[in-house]
Amino acid sequence: MPVNSTLEKVTDRIRARSRAQREAYLALIEEVGGRAPGAERMGCANVAHAFAGIPGDDRLRIVAERGPNLAIVTAYNDMLSAHAPYAGYPAVLKDEARRHGATAQVAGGVPAMCDGVTQGTPGMELSLFSRDTIAMGAAVALSHDVFDAALMLGVCDKIVPGLLIGALHFGHLPTVFVPAGPMTSGLSNNEKSKVREQAAQGLVGRAELLEAEQQAYHGQGTCTFYGTANSNQMLLEAMGLHVPAAAFVTPGTGLREALTREAVRTVLGITRNGGRYAPIGHVVDERCIVNAMVALLATGGSTNHLIHWVAVARAAGITIDWNDFAALSAVVPLVARVYPNGSADVNQFQAAGGTGYVIGQLLDAGLMHEDVLTVRPNGLREYASEPAQGADGAVAWQVAGASRDEAIVRPAHPPEAAFSPTGGLELLEGNLGRSVIKISAVPEDRHCVEAPARVFDSQEALQAAFRAGELDRDVVCVVRWQGPKANGMPELHKLTPPLAVLQNRGFQVALVTDGRMSGASGKVPAAIHVSPEALDGGPLARVRDGDIIRLDARAGRLDVLVDAAAWQARPPEPFPATHAAANNRGLGRELFAGMRRNALTAEEGACTWL
Image (tube, rainbow, N blue to C red; front, side):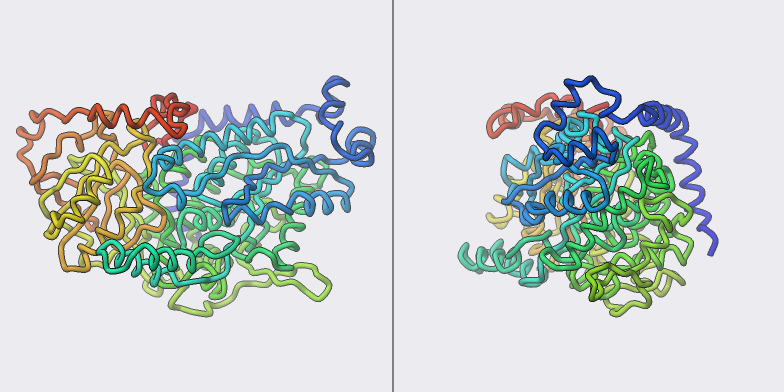
């Protein structure tokens, strides 16, 4: 089927908008990539330092035999379930490299924090900026400049975008991302959410809540809901940066190790001497970015990526904005229902057809660019497959085929065969600014909410008002001073249970904030990432208790219903001095003051390096 006309138009306007910076980016990576290998180019002392710590036979391969040397950049730590499996990866990767006449070095590690641990705590205020810190960490690792290609080991929320941004600043290097897979299924996400809502009402205590949480999060691997971490993996597949269909194979299996070894063979095949040069700066072009956006919309993925992939695109010399997401969302059907957009977890998604089914459907419907460069020799169509391990231990792929559970994944064509003919994300505009809303999990009768505002300066204040019974009514809760410049734009996922309780009681409820919600946010309508933020002259600073706010996802509007002249004349509330002081001290927040000052808006990717 021909490529969808809207897809073509969006891609063309991104290409035109980005032409100058993209050309400059490509010229730079060509200049850098055209140099001699590091072991030949550098001084003898530099070379000796670079390889002093590796076995002599590896040193011989690099220096004398001029074999490829792979950089391993890892987000391993053993307190994050998703990254704990990476402990043994370097040994496996090095062994596979040696089998093919190459070497591999752990070039460096990057920090990896878990939003699930820091939700609702001061540490969450470092979360968004950890992405750019990770990018800088990856750049430091690769700056030793003795590598022919790179393997990036990371899975979760800010880690993958950070590694991508870092890798794209070394765009001359062929790069493959190596996932670790999800944990096995535990307590269902629906049951976990029910217990959280009961706890918010005081119906169960801490012991019962902790037991439920530990049954849900119980082993190594990513969390099993379709939040930011697992959305990352879907997008990497759509961009052709993984070994095909590697995203959702659980840790500790033979297939998982076989796919990890395949990553080495894949990256060696795209080095300058590997027969098909495919550096990451060439792979990630306008079409690749659009494919990622489509995959996000088609699966109802994390709202965080309306920030992160803007930043990723910028790192490749490409400019995208929320208008591009909105235009694509109008023509991309929702083909997957995975919690919080449904009841299935990612293991059930994988069993129903997984990434291979989704990509195949989108390609067949003309909703992805098939003629793109990927890390594999047969292009993006190779990603419309699923892997299996044969008796000899080798991986073989077969076409994903039909959905094995149409309650989880459905065809993309015709659009009425999907769960929804449009994507799961919408752009909202109005006199309160620009924002986004994830509607794929919101009941249709909640797509438009009009109610009096209750204004809060922190999420803790909202929770206190809920506990005091002050929100038992139709209400639009405005939580401001949560943007990048104010406090690092923390996720406000702790607000989901109390707001869900109010909605379950029959009230019309919505959230409006310049902060973020977790990738696990769901059934409560939430206008998030409101830009400009309150601290940067945004209109949320003018909202007062009792103002009527209308959030209309159908019309794409977010407005306060106040007389226009009175609204313009109303002075903004000042940033509370207590908040300004608290956001700048304790638990490492002082170190991120420069990032808060320099951060761009959410729609500009909240980048701190530009």
